[in-house]
Structure formats: C-alpha cells, structure tokens
Image 1 (spheres, chains in turn red, cyan, yellow, green):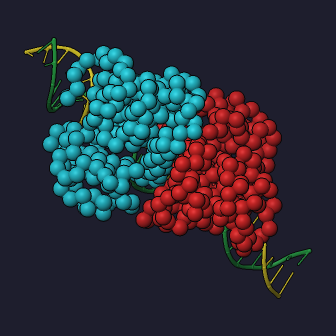
Image 2 (cartoon, chains in turn orange, brown, blue, yellow):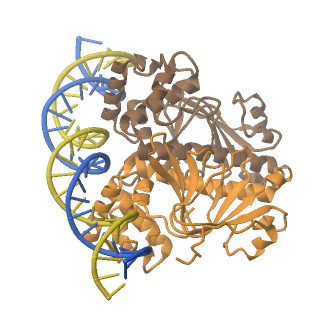
Image 3 (cartoon, chains in turn orange, yellow, red, brown):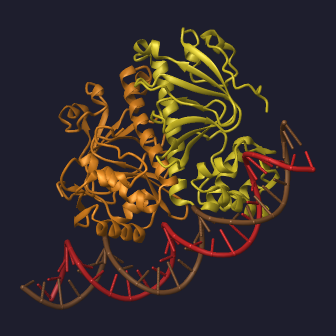
Length: 241
Length: 241
DNA sequence: CGCCGTCTTGATTCTGTTCAACTCTTGTGG
DNA sequence: CCACAAGAGTTGAACAGAATCAAGACGGCG
C-alpha cells in the first residue's frame, strides 16, 4: 500500500494546503482563497467517517487517494454500498442522509480531505461558483445512483458482476485492473452475497472473458466481448458521470 | 380521473402563467418574473416525455398533478422505474441521463409544467437563487435514489412491498391511500415481476396489515405494525426528501 | 353480452442464499 | 525457516425465494 500504515489523523491544517492538494479537478479549488477548516484523514481499510450531523450540508469529504464506499445499513445489520468513491470524488457528508446508518468507509487505505465550510455558510448561500460546484457534485452522484438502481432492479447476478468488472476496466484503460476491495465489498455493492460473487467470478474466469492474476487484479482481453453480453453500455472513464 | 381525457397539448404559454400555477412550493417561483419558455403538458396514462438532448440541463418538468415515473430500459426491453414523481416534484430533463433509454412516463393522468430555461442559460449560471434551487432538487432526488438502492439491494420481496405501501400511506396521512399505478408499474419500481407483486399483496392482505378496498385503494389500520416488520424507518410525508 | 386488459392463482423451474467444510494466503512467533 | 493461526476466498449440498409459464377471474366498456 502506498499510504503510511498509520491510523493517526494528520492534524488540521489551514486551507492554503489546498493549493498543493494532488486532487485533480477538485470542485472546490474555487475556495482555495477562503479560510475554511480543512483537515486530512488517513484511513485504513475498514475505517469509517461519519458526518457529525447538522443540517447545512457544508461538510465535504474529497477522496484524494484510495477507494471508499458510501454505505448504509439496516437495523438488523444488512449492509448496502450505495456508491463507490474513488480519487477525485466528492462526498457531501449529509448527502447520503446523516445518522449512524450512513457512513463513508475505506475499502482500501485512503487519503481523504475534509472541508468544513459551515463557518462560511452565510456567504456561500449566494456564491454562485460554490453553488454550481455543489450542483454538479449532486448531479454526478445522482446519475450514478440511478444507474445503480437499474442494475439492482433488473440485472441478474452474472450481468451485475460482468458490468462491474467491465466498468472498472473501462475506467482504468488498458492493462491490469486493480480491484481494491474484498469479495464481501463487491457483494454489498452488487446486492449479492459473498459466495455468489465468488461463484460467478469463477464462471466468468472459466469463460475466458476475464483473466485473474491475483484475487484482486485482473485483465479483460476483450472488453467488447464483455459488452456484448450486457443489455446496457459500459460507462467509460470519460463518460463516467 | 380529474384531468380532461385529452391527449392534446395545451399550447405554449408565456411565463406569467406561473403565477397562477397551483404547484405548491415550486422551486422555480424565483423565476416567475423571467421570460422563460413555459408550456403545460396533459399526459394520459402511458404517455411519455423525452428530453430533447443538449447538455445544459436547463429543461425542467414540474409535476402539477398526477403520478409519473422516471424510467430506464435496457436493450432487451427490461424496464426499471428509478423514481416516482408526484405533485410538486421537479425533474431536470437531463438529470436521468438523456437518450431514448430514459424518459418520464405518466402512471396516471398527469399535468406537467415544462420550463425551458436554455435562453437564460448565460445569466442563470451566476444566479444563486436558481443554482440553489437546482442543488436542492438534485439533492432531494439523490437521497431518494440512494434509499432506492438500499431497498433493491438488501430487502426481500415482502419487505419491498410493505415498505412501499407503508411509505405511500405515510405520505398520504390517515385514511384511504390511492395507489395510482398498475401492478406492473409497482413491479418495475420494486425490481420484481407482476405475479410476485400480486402474490405478496395477497399475503399482506391475508395478514391483515393492509386492507384493500379496490385493487388501487387501501387502508393501513396500524402503520406501526407495518414498521415493526421492516428493518428500516418508513419515511414520512414531512421527512420525504 | 362479449371482448380486452388487468389482476390473481397454480404448478414448475431456476437462480441465488444458506450452512458447512475446505483451501489459500499472509503474517506472527518460536 | 517453519509451524501455526486468522482472515479471505472457494466449493459443495440442500433449501428458499422469486421467475416463468399457463390458466382462470374480475371489471370496465363497446
């Protein structure tokens, strides 16, 4: 792993740090000049961030590095991953609904930049650059969530897994695709269970559509062949909303 | 049905009409003074509206009366309803992704107000009232979509139907709940098929949790009893995001 | 009255889950 | 360096839930 194996939190730093933030295309660069509360989190796999309530929706997490998931759970413990978050994704802490039933969880070790814009709430309410950025964040997440709904509602297990593998591959470009999450995480994202994921992966391996180097690395020799088995287009990196 | 059974479109009217628009809490009242292109659509059950492409996401549909659905479909025709739209809901035409695989469909007869703000695009880009309204629309839809994902991913058929009935009831308040959609529509919303929906409804009727007056009207004698069978809280009318 | 679309019900099939055992990898400590 | 433990992944057998296929019931409308 490329991140120091420390569970510690890097102490809060004041915003100018954003200027050196490696996060490409950060929607909040517009705020670089503002005195916002910023802090970096180093998360190890399994660590969680929970929003500390309040209405304003002005606490943001930006994934700088690694893969995380927006999770929900039911009273009886069933977990569902409602969104995968990767480098550059922005999560409005309230966006998923607050409460202990919603949290951000690191699937691999992660670096996350937290911005708390609450102190600026008043002026941001009429800041069109900020509002525009917020809208695009919500819109992008909405598009993904709706695709997720279609997938869960109407694709069978084989199609779900194939689409998932294909999508990850399309976003990675040619070459080896890293799958920075466990079988259980995949299952919770696809609405299946661990054993089913494992079995379906086995079938897909045997079919030759996908070749696994390790349980978390694979190659797709022919993405078009994967697409041909799906009733829907595979979102590409550029088109990824 | 309370809407004239005409398939016709009411001719385009200019915006001042918005002042007399019965749509409560319309997010676009802020624009009442602007010379936007507005038109009213009368839709009969099954009628569709498709966004006519373009990037800007400046075409909006506001449900004035009736129940509609944001639909998607796959190449092979499988349909999934990704969102139910009722009085007061606002749909950004591009929000669901454009193309013939995404459309708004009337589940009952509907009145829909269409606003095309494209001519105002330039000035709206820095109009904070507009941007704020857009954000809240997207955010509300996102919250619902994520709840939908959890439901489809982790609830079984009985829980899905119960939650659906409970939610509709909670939004209606006490008394008779109208179910303005067919079994097939319910199935497409819940990720099930028609027969399963019918069977589960039968089981729920027999259990006494819900009493049906007609196939499209029912009463929930004890909402708490319904909630007790679910692993998640039933969203109420006020809390409906 | 008879037709058509919707809804319901039944019998059967099949997909995915559950429960259980086993393997593989990785990391730890002797 | 090897033995061992713990977690992750895989595989199998039995089961349950939902889909499918098929038939019939109900209700509105010509």
